[in-house]
Image (cartoon, rainbow, N blue to C red; front, side, top):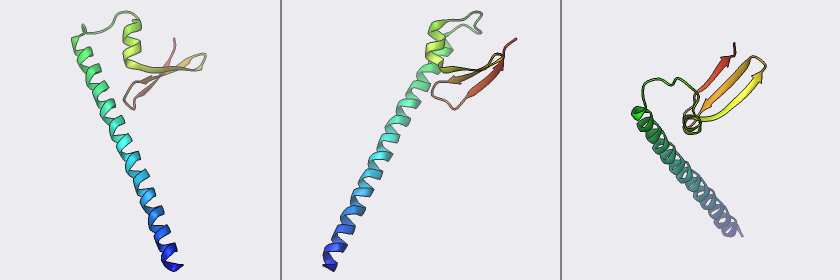
Length: 91
C-alpha cells in the first residue's frame, strides 16, 4: 500500500510538471508571436511618412488595442503588443 501511494504521488507530480511545461511552451509561442507582430509594426511605421496629420483607420487597427472612455474629459489608449497605455485629457 505504501508503494502504491508513493507511485500515485509520483504520477501526480509528473502530471503537474507536464502541465507546467505545456504552459511555458504556450507562453513561449505567445511571446514569439508578440515579438513578430511588434517587429512587423515597427517595419511598417518605418515605411510611413514622418508624423500623421489626420486620423487613419489602418493605423489605428495596426497600432491600437483599445480606446477606453474614462469620463467626459479623459480617454485611455492601449497600444498593441506593448505594455503602453496613455491617458489623454480631451480639450
